Image (cartoon, rainbow, N blue to C red; front, side, top):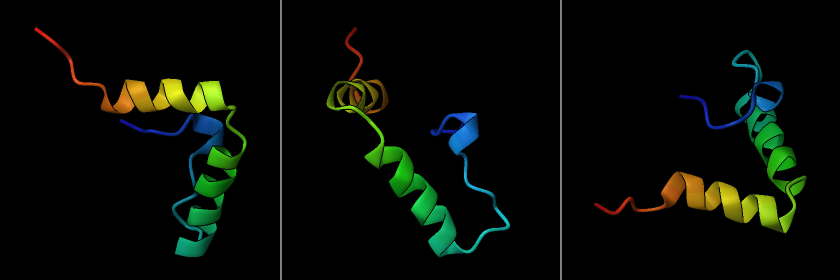
Length: 48
């Protein structure tokens, strides 16, 4: 699946630098709390 919300998904026709800028802008706009939750959601090890 896609990792970025739809409004932040980079346009595949953009240059690599343009896509990287879009991702950087998305991350820069995160609050600390949201960034922590996203990290946990993406990288948490499921038990059981």
